[in-house]
Image (cartoon, rainbow, N blue to C red):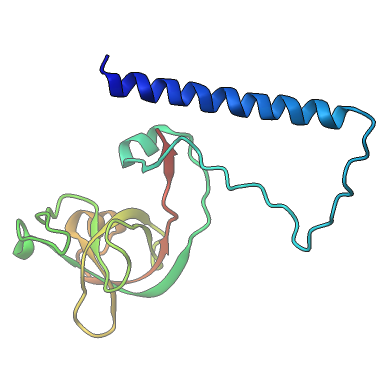
Length: 178
């Protein structure tokens, strides 16, 4: 140990002994029959400091979520409109999130929803529903609400018509703690 470290340790020991002595003296001074000062009511109630959990939230992957028991979550946002689909012409092109489009995955494009949002899309003509992830921006033709990947469109039974009236329910983000 260097001389500086010994001085620091000695200083911290002295400070600790001082505060222990002051605390001990104050406790015994008030323990005698001396009247304590009257408590003054505060205008604002004492609020305990916020408790910050030691755990940090992380987003749960779809695979981890599918193994969890299914619970009905109320939708955060709901819209009704016309859906279209896009496929081979866009296969392999970069989407707005930087990833490459794969028409065989359950993906969708929406103009305003946050990228990565999970959306339940229901075909109002036949009642079929599918959960997709918003990974791109669009659709650009006026009057369209959402663009679906080819696989999502096939699941909804709308590939032959090309367009379908749908309801989209934006699902809440699911968090887990590590």
